[in-house]
Image (tube, rainbow, N blue to C red; front, side, top):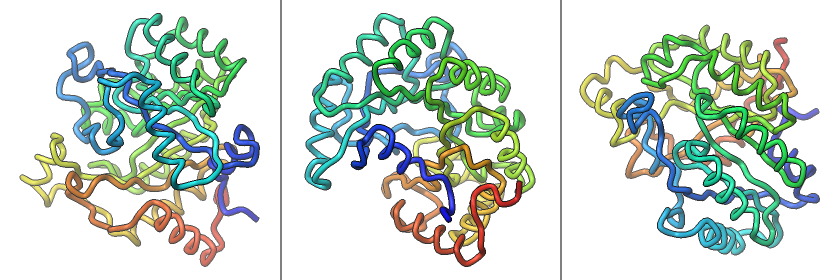
Length: 305
């Protein structure tokens, strides 16, 4: 029996013809409405985009050039694979529809690319864009990945997210209703959230038509407001130890319906930017630990439903 619904395996079977599917991150030169004043300024308290932008992702380069360099980078690691172009930096639906179309189409015009994954905020999609993505989805793979972060409005306000949870619910429902692959992202252990609140998040996510979910631990990053707050008031934060997070993540997964593919349990930020927690593990090493612990406990996704 599988321990959890592995989204990477899904992609390999569905669009990779059995081969590995690698995401190639690109920087489309976007900004964020929570930074430029439309929604707010300063951004979310936890956010520093440099934590997940590869070196080849420079918005001075064309999308095609970034994709080509990304493919060249990963080609040396794996002999055979297919590629998805991942619009990752900032809010990748925040722009004029004609410009968005141009960028997405440019990404798809590279050999070996099987589709696009578009990371965005739930308050930055509209019917015109979703209708276009639904049409695009008829000829290639399209996934819209929403930063949910939390399902609790008190938390969203505290981290200066700039929207409420109902906004995420609407965007996810409207995207999935058009037949577009829909992903979500949450952060475990945000300030003020109890274990009970996080288990409630699993219950709420089960009510949504999500195809995939990325979850990861709270990370305190240099250059963020949360980082400054942590340095000034460490006692106000609870930073989970590795084993504590493993147990929490397993309990969460046990309450998550099987239909939701799990894409990630953990995230690893660059050492020079990461303040805490300092676990010193790569993602695959953490995954091996959580799978080992799930096996020991007899745990599996959806067990507690």
